[in-house]
Length: 498
Image 1 (spheres, rainbow, N blue to C red):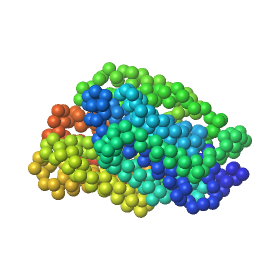
Image 2 (cartoon, rainbow, N blue to C red):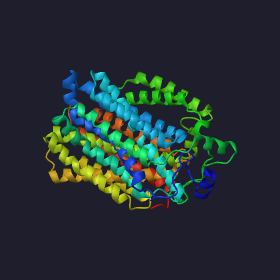
Image 3 (cartoon, rainbow, N blue to C red):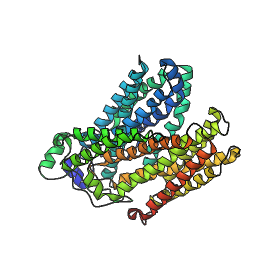
Image 4 (cartoon, rainbow, N blue to C red):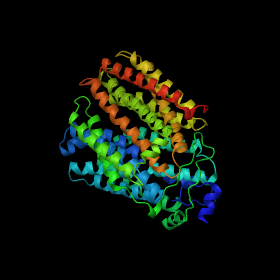
């Protein structure tokens, strides 16, 4: 029965059984996915307005509280592809539910933390637990699209993007409100009711994963439950040879540990570019070499390097996504500091000036959902980033408010376009039985951009966010925007896709 369904519809997920009836991409499927997807971005920004209060509460300084931000990024960068791989092996619904349980536990640990170290542990758990939502959502959406015989609709991807952008934009406001009225512990405790609601909706509405015995039995007969890639996707390639899934596949624990160790070492180096710790490059090189060697020897590796070598367009999508968010985070963090220290605005006023960036990003996510192509929006993204960099290059301490607001909008528009377009590219380019891991790696590239951006800002500003530092950021973002133009124009997989 499962095999017949896979042959009739080209099902791309052997680990998920989707109902044949019901409205496609309707409320029952989308509600739990959207609720789970907002947890990671809202936790990444919500804590920003509570760092001072937390520091006073535990008697620690800014250097220590900065780890509350870094720990979540580090954990998320490692956990996103890990959770995606687990979703491909064990089923996206199971991993989605497990992630929400971990997020629930993290909320309890943070709310009741007796010492500062417990808060760090809570943030690491939050990074791990909330990282399950996005790759599992992409895997479930890809399976539903294959059941219907068409690609994932762009408006559906836009909803995921909008959930992330909207929650990230409202995070500082929500965090400030909770810290001022209830106390900073509420910033951790708020994850409990959200996770509980997500668990209830997921248990009720998400389609159950197929029995592992079914997937293993069909694989043993030599008949794959994995169908062809989305037949109408914007960017498609020859279908990949199916890999064993379910209980018949093993989880590459050593590969995950080596990947985590190498990535953590690299990020620790990137976080201190102003004072490079060159000694970290030695263990990084050793760990990276060991990881590559182990992955090439494994029949079912954690990260299929041979698959990535065969899917050059997917690798280019990761590169474009990471560079785009490197530019966006450079401006998001660097512009706000410059507004306060060089332009004389208060924190509240700077937040209001940055608000159009978030609103423009949300609007463009919706508008991007109405487009059918990938290349056009990505080209427009690079052009808008280049125009925004030009405005920053001429900004100074007495620049009119209208110009500052225009610059904020210019950097918000490409954020929405890039998020939706790169999601569509990953959904189309990823191998049918590895979309979860592929989606997780997309987020990893974004987190690498975020950490690199924070390091560049520290390098350019030093002790003062002045005009000279802002102009260095502008030059850097302009060069990166030109690189994005070149990557988009020369990507043959996008040619003819407007």
